[in-house]
Length: 492
Image (cartoon, rainbow, N blue to C red; front, side, top):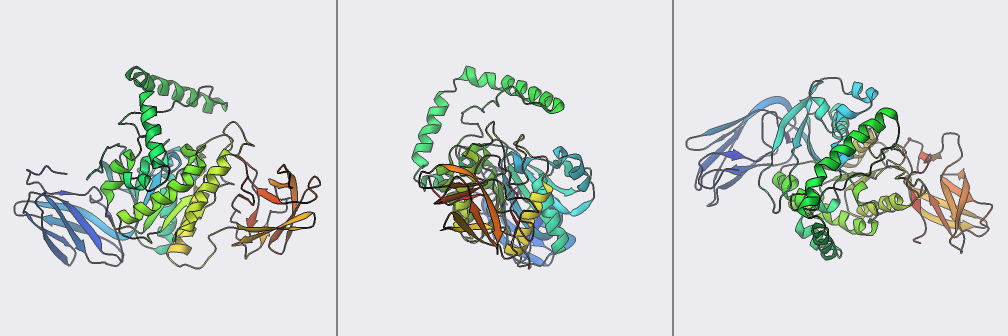
């Protein structure tokens, strides 16, 4: 933003040529100018006025308007200056955020999915928020500017964001804009405000852990990091070319005040400047970097959602998210990823949240699955059904209860109205345990929308699990082809 002494009119980062504004909702337009400046904002037939405050801030509210693919200029005028934002559309706007699997660009998809994106969709647009870290909530952010999804530009789009927006555009028939604010390898606490972290029981311990981590990164260690990352990237390229495993461990980024690991640092720099942009909702894909801290995540994630919504002044703003997929993490049978997936489900206790299950579309050998289209379709289906009220199935089977029946365990589900299917194969990745709490491989019969689970090694079952490991084979679906979410009936 402009300095307080400057007469220059500046706009918030979401307003640039080719922007998409949210339809059917009042749209805040804001920025800075000289103190006491009289500001006039016009958009189509609307004209609204404001006077800047003593600190130079100004904000106006455009009335809600229907979707329009007709480009209109947004004009902001002061006494001596006029700022023109050209070619603005009105449609649907979603903020997509998270770590690398959200940031992952179309250009790095596998070939068949890159070809799916080799079309011109000028009414689908992305605003990429550039990477930045800040110690306090910032007013502005650097961006790429709004870009249309043309075949020569779409390579820079978030792949998840692109396919999600494309699906909505095709179904709704209106412009769709995504604001892409994501950064690979980042933890959830970096995306949370100070208030959000402090609202949890783990906030103080997290801050102490961060201060300890910073003390373990003296300047000479920080100086070595770029070379270590360069070596890792070269080894990674070689490993992918030869289809082998990278022999080098991924170098953890430094713990420093300008590090993306800094608690609150990404919220301050990459989320706060977007407030109070009119949105339809959020899409979130993150969690891999918090594996190993599932109990914390179960508390942090809902706190983040609540504070983001509070920042936008709407406690019911839709929040869609991806449950992290299957990944071996050098230990396919380990449970750390399963625990993080379970922690993510705690967010479903909040209203207007929905989860896309990804347990069957990951890559056990690659933390960055190169296929994003199916997962994006599931997210878009959640939006279509849960947000836009379009009839259809969007949520796959979710564990409801497990009841012993002699030597078997009957498992019931919600969202299994279309029945259960395993595509003609036995249901995989089932386990049963008795009172000894030792789990054994189990099999199941699909019976009237339930599972009847048995194991020859468990005569009196008390607990059942499905797909409860880092990288399970998950093949249980509903009749609409939506996967069942991993679950356990115990809390051992």
